[in-house]
Image 1 (cartoon, each protein chain N blue to C red):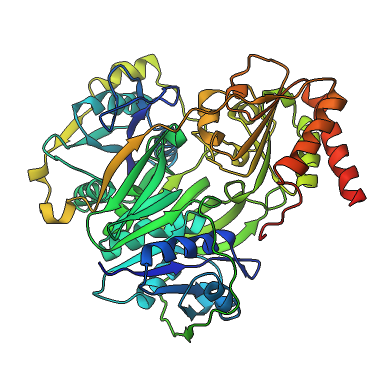
Image 2 (spheres, each protein chain N blue to C red):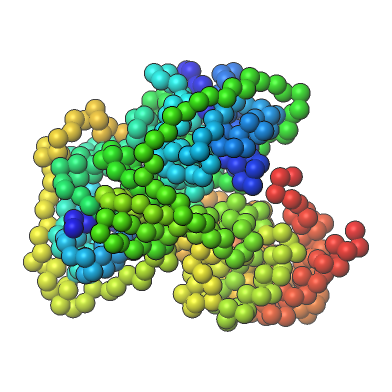
Length: 325
Length: 262
């Protein structure tokens, strides 16, 4: 089975995103001995080609265009279709990010290939890639595969182990011209939200608050802890519905589904919809006054206590440790 | 203005999932309108109230979807379309998208609204696939919408940031949480919904061949995650608990002090 695998890499602040490095590892596994080609668009594409090669790409194709400086559905789909080979079976891997989610169904529809989104792991059985993905926000899982040779997958950040950087790897780098026209959307402005800009779905550490935080100000100690840990702040539906925070922070079956290395749940009772959205985090710490709270069923470390007493102390201890070392 | 809403019937988010012979057991489960699709219905009705027009709710599925379609009519949609999948042996997102697009391609469409994602399989595929097949513009994960004639001002959620977008009709948009607060069906609304038109579309009514909609992916296995092991209690006064947790985080699980790219 031929699997020339392509990876559309994404950049943030001029560097390749972790999820794209993870996508390269997934691509390497799917490709076997077949080539892996990285694709990068935009003004920082060329300078990031080596990173893609050092993490698993055999070659990198780059393109820049005024219309690729800012993501639009039209711009990226036109460019991608010009870069991908015609009439040749391929697998395309993209991160399950804002861009990946927006772009992948359009590209799959256009090319007429199958799409499997939000995969968390993969295996290759008799040359055929089989992808595992959560369903019901992680209450269950399914394994899916393509019925045809070609296909497109999006991978969830933080789940596929990246390949170590190998500076001895070299590969072909080609810069191509693309024609882009008739962009139907104009991005007028991007407003950065509170929370430091770390996206919840990609955050390695999340400190989340529920109804137990009692007010918008109640998130303050959680923000301080998240700051010390270099993590992002999340929330349960209860906290969002109560108006303590923005819906953009909501974690759960409605809201974001997250799998960070560390999830600290403070004042969250653990409704089934919330548990679905976070219970596959690697390490879960629960802090709650109620020892019977369902959040403790999924916690690796259980602290029965008042978050307003405990959390500031955790922050203080971590800060002290940091200043010692 | 012709406004279409893409609706999916999903498991209630309160439901626990059980699997037997590789299939999720549906018996006895409560079903609801996919919560993200409720935002789409609400937005469609609000647009009609401001700008006039007709709201048509479309789903692909079996007869059991009538309940959710009637609920959307009770909320205020004008008519409902059920694309009957009884004769489809095997379907994936490609199948559903192609069939829905085949239906919509024969309609005069100004706006299509859908959910950002469905809470059951979480794939987020159908809406954008439909937009591509119809050749119309799309904006996904919207949290704000203003319409003035042909001009559309949108705010969308991009990983926590808000992107402001200007575009024009016709357009397909997927709705993100925070866009609006979906209304509950009123009692008069429920009475009226019983008499509102619900049209059934059969495969043969659609101008599309099987080769075009046959699935491109297949599910080979479904399984439940292994149960979590009992966690460890960290006891004592707040100060002690905090100290012990800080130690655990640093020494045992080494998650503290790692950068994004390490």
